[in-house]
Amino acid sequence: MDPSTSRPAVVIDNGTGYTKMGFAGNVEPFFNVPTVVALNDSFVSQPSRSSIKGSSSWLNQHSAGVMADLDFHIGEEAMSKSRSSGIYNLTHPIKHGQVENWDAMERFWQQCIYNYLRCDPEDHYFLLTESPLTAPETREYTGEIMFETFNVPGLYIAVQPVLALAAGYTTKKCEMTGVVVDVGDGATHVVPVAEGYVIGSSIKSIPISGKDVTYFIQQLMRERGEHIPPEDSLEVARKVKETFCYTCSDIVKEFNKHDKEPAKYIKQWKGIKPKTGAPYSCDIGYERFLGPEVFFNPEIYNRGFTTPLPVVIDKCIQSAPIDTRRALYKNIVLSGGSTMFKDFHRRLQREVKKIVGARVHASEAKFSNEVKAQPVEVNVVSHPIQKHAVWFGGSVLASTQEFFMACHTKAEYEEYGASICRTNPVFKGMY
View 1: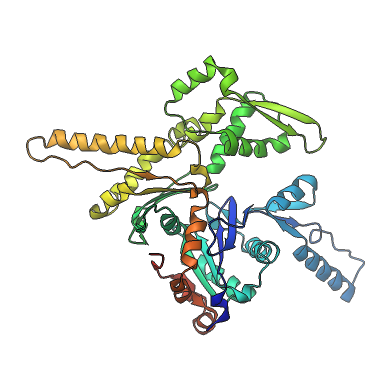
View 2: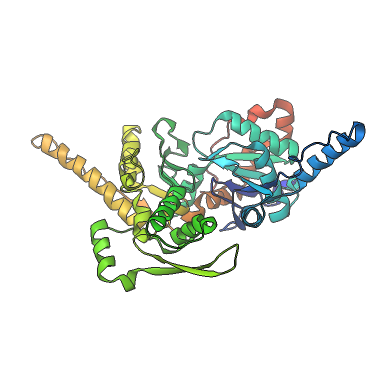
């Protein structure tokens, strides 16, 4: 028996904004860190000395390269280094759900494995996640890094919405048919899944995500003239989004409530200026409900995109095979930190029900004398762990024996090459 199969698998969910990591079998990830790398470019950007020749010049360049390789940070530490020092450049290896900087991504994984999880990658199987519609070449690059650099014994690359669906079931039977509404920091996808398989032709994505909510809140506070240090502006907006924002049922009524009782609804944020250490404060008003509203009325933020999220979900289901649609409406699963706004799932369910009800009513009016349309059940599944739904689904999958059988192994990689990582079998070992 392979000793690495007796140890818990490592589960790493790389998102555009945050990376969740931990070991299979746990309910929550051990660490949740921003997906960002701070690189010290001062070593490699130093002008070469023309006076130094021969081996000394080569040695200096080599030493600079080695120091640049060693001097980097990830997560909150990287953001702190970037703010406090001018020699570190922030790099976001993942943009809109896709890896764009593989060198930074490899450094990021290195820190995740050795500094955070503190494990030997040669002793654990790995489950990594990918965004829907990821190119097969990306999986090959991932396989090469994992097998060549970290020498992992086994690797499985899972599609994030499938894992979120596995995490979203609330009964003993796990329903692997449903629509996953994955709203992350850098990308929003609506992905229909039938029996564990993604219906690729029906995937919808919208250009509004958690980061856009942050930018919108930042813009609203700036326009109102709140005195926030420019270098702290985006971070304050992010914390306001995560702490104070909620979804309202009617935007006009919400404005009236705030105007009538400002003392009740207006909150205050207190902070310290990073450069001087002086305290400052600012008011938080309309942005509390206007931030999440961009998903339901996107025109208030992005004039180039005006389709609300409920309409996108309906279009996604309507483009799926007709025999799957009722099951898809019945199991709309939320995933991602930007679905955690209070009452978000209730507003989404009501809006989708309204669209479906209007279609059923129109159908009945058209064929009133012939057929009676059956009501369509619409259910949006929300649960406390949906912020880490993808990671939790991976944790559940990777804790089964079927997982180790489904993984690509180091021996297979050495025999067939990185092309084995292009496909990963779907398995349902959790039920």
